[in-house]
Length: 467
Image (cartoon, helix red, strand yellow):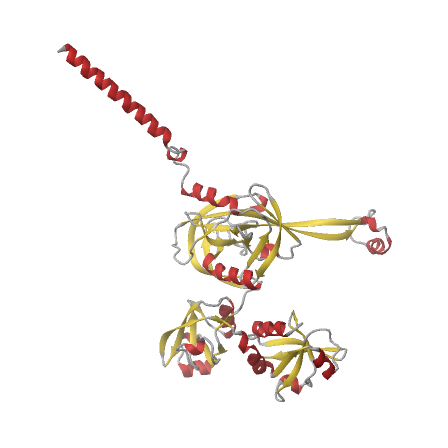
């Protein structure tokens, strides 16, 4: 019997021994984060995306002259400016810091804010591993405060994964990474405080922003706003200087459409709706029985336009577009300016004392309709400057487009313009050929007026035409 208990005891001892070894092997095989709960989802998201976050510095060389004998402004400053040794010139470098995030590691595309690059000279991009590249601007859009840079490298760079800003939840955790005040790769966290925010600055209205309590300061601008999975849901911006404890970001779904235009065209193609509106005065408001005297009235719908394919009608009153209230024609233009091609727009309209919803899908203005639009707006037809055309009209202008035909009732005809005059400029756009003219017509078609530079012989005339 004693021998039996000894055998059982030995077997149990072996069993416990192998169980102990198995447990040791199991725990040793677990990754480090399994035993360190501090390495949570935020830490993992930061580790994943940080290599794709870059520091952007823009340098500008400024030439100054220094009076070695006097500090401050005086009569002698102009003396030294005109007569003293040019060696007293000094080079000063102004550096503005911002952030960006690599969105395409293969092609080297970097997403950032447009205001980060404002008045930039040489643009340098520094990665987290301290590699430095010189970048060039692919395209920038001040209306949406978005810019795309590109750096040249033979290596594939780390990049961020695009997320979705359509289904964001108020209260969900977000992470901001950037370089505030020059402190590289600073991480702040918070929650989404609100969606669809409108921000008014001194000269611009920004719509549909994400509001967060994650700290966003100068230097954070252009950096990524991430969800808890490390996906890009917004581009941080510090345009609201008065905010304390409030940050704003451009939703990535909105930015994605602008990025595509910037990469493809170098600029954002303005969306086409095809509606002309006018303000509603008090008398017209009473006649239409418009609620709270709000909205604008549809005065014209352009044939073949996206609006002409919808249920909207001339005489309808537009109350809102995608939850943006429309109180005046200027607000209507401001909202439409923020729209990109292919976007779904929900118009709330007032018709027959009832509120209706109308859906319109925006588009890009078709190139083949440009000349028809030019004839409608300016009353002219144009041609490129061929050798034959130059000889026919005795043109000395080196570039531009020539007016080949003109309506006698047009404003240009009434002030004395005539076929053979050359269009050299439209607003700030220099016109070298028909392609430039077509772009300018599309770009300025919704403006109230356009400034045109006409050349006849060796003389140039600046003319403002109301559209």
